[in-house]
Length: 429
Image (tube, rainbow, N blue to C red; front, side):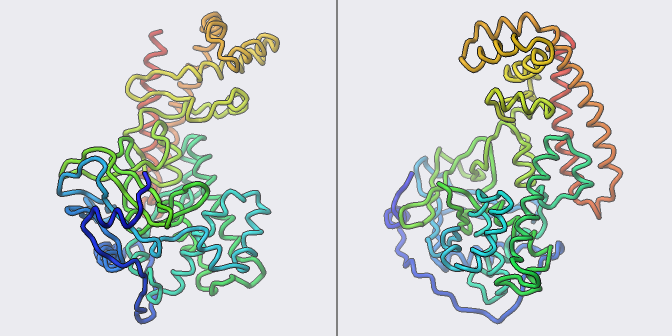
């Protein structure tokens, strides 16, 4: 839904100027130590002073002093404006491109050379965050930067020891984020001994670079190829059942609306991505969505067959509560069996899937069911044994040096619970 900023302000009973002029404070830096508390409420005051508007009764809330999120103390009717952030306050990839020009262009050539042209919008926001971090208290966005988490559990923050304790699919997703960060790290150094336009203290500081990458990754949203970070609107948590929606109007302002009637006492939430499989969210954002109905079946060895049939990881699911298996899993397993034993039948089965010929496809599945079941049982039993090994290894780590162990164990427990239900169903078929 797109509504002009003026209409939103009028609906809220607000008269405000969209001018964005800051008064610089004495120079200082942002302390990224894990022992530093997030200064969230100063950020909220700062946002209000510079044009951010929110519905009456909206409060930032935390249960643990680490994760903060908007909660409403008043009923919010469906369709009501919830929050407004003026465009001058918002980071965008296009603004960063205009601001940094040639220095950004030089760095981006390294990303393009690494085959990461699709990551350029994210890199531009990352670049902007680094620039503002370097300014410290002189940055107009200092209060927002100082309100952000210091520690992240994303794949980019994980180590090889973490990957060794995860199922292959989760390790693959997490490692991909780490590799993206490594390429961003290389890109900010376009020439030897040069971190344009950053000082050595920033450009050569892995802690700072990784923090900036995680901020850009976890707090930005992509709309039509553009990356946006709207301070305060970046505080919404993920949920499978959302109650607000974020959009941007033609003037670049951020508007948040209620998509359903929201009773007082409710957390306001948005969707970060596909809720049917928690692993990509786990790798990208560093949390486990236990409301997800299922998880990828972990058939990484059948990835070629999956892609040949036009399926994605999100199609090949085991369902947590019921232990049911998505039909696409059977398709992929059978296709592999037939390819190895009867290529002509493999081609016929493949065509039935591609053409949507359910009768022929189901006939194949029925005729070869015993082979499909045997292959699936071996996979499930083997994965359950491996999960015990991976979790045992994670439990042996010192949590002080491996702070992501609890999340890894939580993820593995979710997968084990799902696979156990699938196993029980298969054993009694």
